[in-house]
Length: 82
Image (cartoon, rainbow, N blue to C red; front, side, top):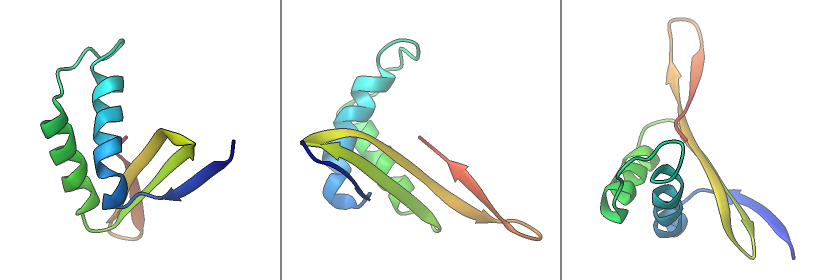
């Protein structure tokens, strides 16, 4: 069983959207994401300027991190979205 951290690209979009729905529609969030709305949300984040994202795999996708950097007056700020 090998573990791998890879860059979050559109290659992982579908699998991450399913995971997003599974996690955020459960306790403690109890949100109401559909696959389509989760996929759209992640697609928008991926296409945000300054996007940085990673996926964690161990035979299958287990998790991901997605965010972006935003320029401030004197430095960049990191915004983690998920």
